[in-house]
Image 1 (cartoon, helix red, strand yellow):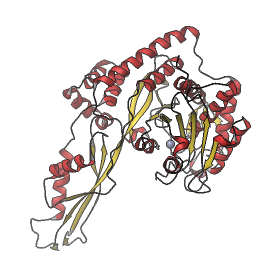
Image 2 (cartoon, rainbow, N blue to C red; image 1 turned 120 degrees about the horizontal axis):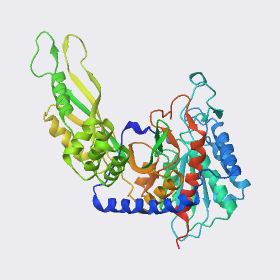
Image 3 (cartoon, protein in one colour; image 1 turned 60 degrees about the vertical axis):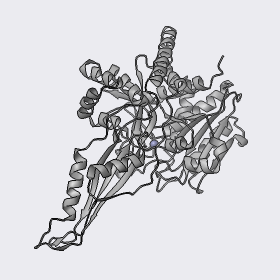
Image 4 (cartoon, rainbow, N blue to C red; image 1 turned 90 degrees about the horizontal axis):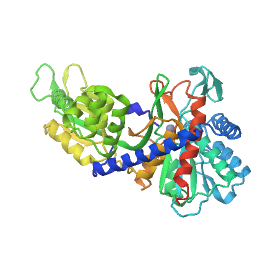
Length: 487
Ligand SMILES: [Zn+2]
């Protein structure tokens, strides 16, 4: 997955206020659960034997080298299958297969009563490459040190993979009867980013195996700052990416006889116009909910501004966007020049000048709208603007009140006072394939990381030991809440 700092956030131009009402209701339900449980004493860790099982699976997964380029996911899928079979899951409910023999996915189904459509639990089992010489320890050994688990995949994404399997085994042991099937899919090649394996391959070749009401995935985690838990983030959607090529052609000539019609100048003016332009500032159901929650976390004058943003104040949006690149990206589509080329000699008039412009687009803004806007902003017929990546809007997951209520009540139960914050990252997790296929997908983990020390894809990747086990408890409770027979 991409780090959240890659950009933010949100979507959907539907009714702004109705979903906020749903969200407020979901929060209200959480508060009630919180008071009920506070008196009972919340359980933040599963019993020792369950912790041990989750740990052992985690260790096993991390110590299998499943780097996207040099590794293989098949042994991870097989290890999971062996654990499941030993726990009594029948062969018929376990699938291992994928686009290539080394890169298998695993899908397992735990049967419920079938009263509701299945719940899909997703995690990827490939990892970003890690070189021993770059790390302080062997990245493919699970090392516990100073309160942390170190190893490639400890955060992204083998913790969630291990916990899904350990918890599923526990549900079976307890004889838990959900009112819907619970499907776990551990997938390959997420870090490769292509549609050739993993979720995309499963959707294309075995949709029946993973078809679901909705899915839970990576992409949203808990944020702490200076040791204090600030928010439990729920990734609801993703901005999508468009790239455009700005290009100007001239006939060229000798640089000793310049003319006004110069390719580089045309391009420079076009980019200067772009630099002064901002797409309209706006909120939608998810961003409004995000700012509403952030206003409580920030408090003070900033909190007041964020509350006004949530209420739709243009003036507050301008202030907030100017104050933070993250909030700016949350409030609008952005386009920025990222690469330049042009000219062929120091003493010749340029025959070509070109730039790449990278856009991160709100799901409610169409690709055609973005292209049309860029043409207007540039206002120069000599500058051709063409899309260099596939047009295709990024669908959003709806802000489902049942999902929000379950996430919020489970969060309050384990970490009283920590707010649930709906967010979106700017690409990319495998959730986008599911959303395109009509399966709403929510990024939620309950693993907390220091917001200034995110090491996914980097060296000495790690997960706090306590976070791992609390996340196990959180996901155990959350999945039960979402699949409990309703009375
Ligand atoms: Zn990931």
